[in-house]
Length: 247
Image 1 (cartoon, helix red, strand yellow):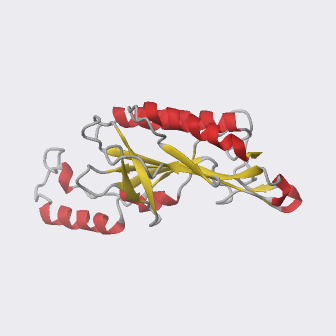
Image 2 (tube, rainbow, N blue to C red):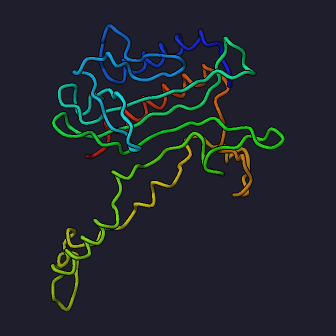
Image 3 (cartoon, rainbow, N blue to C red):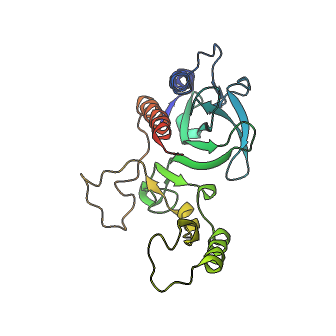
């Protein structure tokens, strides 16, 4: 998808309007900034609304507080990114969509905020005969990722086994009361961070054989309006689900 560069400012303003609602604030200055085709949370956001965080890949970004459980005690933070670039075929006044996504972090103000969930949408490259080629072969685009900080790794799993072995009661008949929940071994789900969970799929309209790509769970945005609607839905959905979570 390519658009006029001048349209990105209006697009960023739409994302800003949704964030104002999602983050429950009437901050007078924009929460979102557009700079040379890159859209992200503004570095000028006050510390009462934002903080600098470290991403799962080791980079840093500014994340906004979500008013969960409330505005005075934020537990969750959200960072966004959207990238466009100039290409020869698009002309000097147009930019081409590269990728966008959001990252969700958990952490009180007095502790480090850790990324545990992300939503990504990456445009395909052009393969042979002009067939789109998406990252991750048959991986969904857009897709969700559960990050490693939210998963139990091998070390924690082995520790749980050791705890269970040391505390396992020596009784002839076992019951739920005999073996406490704390004594049960944890499962190793560290592999889940390599799984792409589609955020948009047309499997109900188009049958997929499981191998052919691109599949009905792979697409790119076709217009700025569609992308803005996607942002609005994603931000509102994440916020709503976190409010409902029993954490």
